[in-house]
Image (cartoon, rainbow, N blue to C red):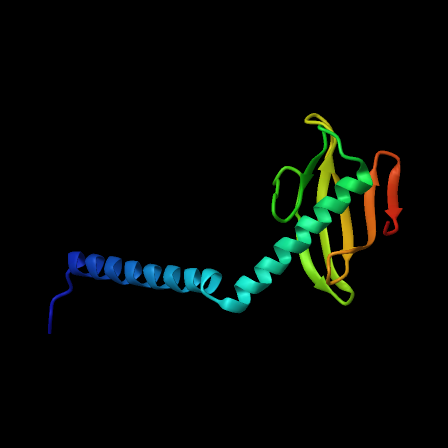
Length: 134
């Protein structure tokens, strides 16, 4: 029987761990970038978020101080942002503020499959504001 060698076990373990890590990294890279349906879904989600951002700016009134955090432009300080499919199309959520020193306020927008706003709920300093589509 062979004698146990600490050095051999350490090198073998390191080689095994390295090969498993590289394999997992390769598979995750292939999953996120190589899948045609995933790329198509990502492009659709990006288009919806851009449409939501444009309609939010129109609803809130565009000015130089307006900052928006959404799924394409997240901000960890502001909070979590989401895009997810809904029965009517899509729902996108995020946060906004009107100046660097002001509090981030949440918003959520429902859009149809074409990116047209169905409704918008925005929290303001006065409370929650429900906006119908234009």
